Amino acid sequence: MVNETRNQGATNTKERILSVACEKYLESGDKGLSMRNIAKEVGITPMAIYRHFENKEALQTQLLMEAFRIFSDYLYTGLKGSNATERFHMTVDGYFDFAAKQSAYFELIFLSTNPMNNLKMRDVIRKESSPTFRFLMDRVRECMHDGYFKNGSAHDISVSLLAQSTGLAALYLSNSFGWSEAEARAMQRKAMKQTLNGYLINDE
Image 1: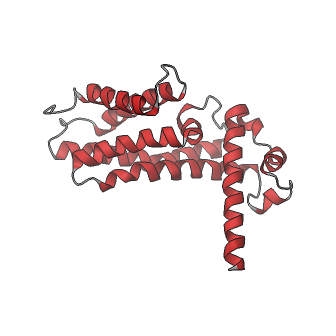
Image 2 (image 1 turned 135 degrees about the vertical axis):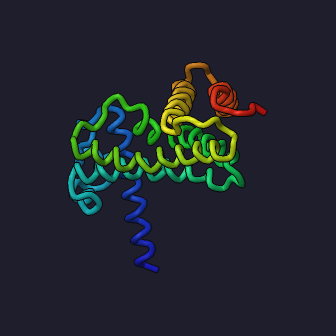
Image 3 (image 1 turned 90 degrees about the vertical axis):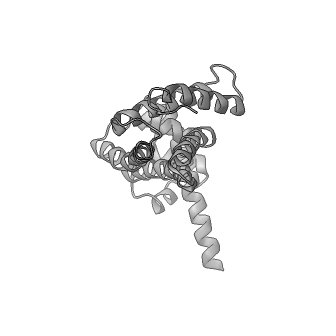
């Protein structure tokens, strides 16, 4: 029991470190990822943070991996759909859920104006982002196979849908139109339907 409590405490501290690191990065870019300042914000000693992350690069890597892990959890709810059409739309809904409920990580992945310029971090981003994009393309391919979408480039369609979803989510998060979450979600579905018009075989 003592070990379980200790492990849970360590997990919570690590999650808190990543959360604060995300906030600091969005505020100031790479220079915001000061191990000392993050430790102070979390409420631990500067040395204690190194029990969780060997160095700044390790923290950056884990931050990106955590962001994409959470993102994939939201997307993969689409697998609960009973057919290709349901799985596609549940995946799109999962994307909006991620933006609405995990806005800091959404901003880190899709909206950050201070990208991590370290070449290793770019490799991490490419590696971690590939599965989620492939998952979206798989949903599009399924819809083509089932006759819901017209045949075409699953890659190009996925890019277009991703851009549309990101744009609507960004408008909601920036409060550009003063939408409530329910209003933004309704607009997201309406805009998605309009975007899909060119890809659907039958718009029911």
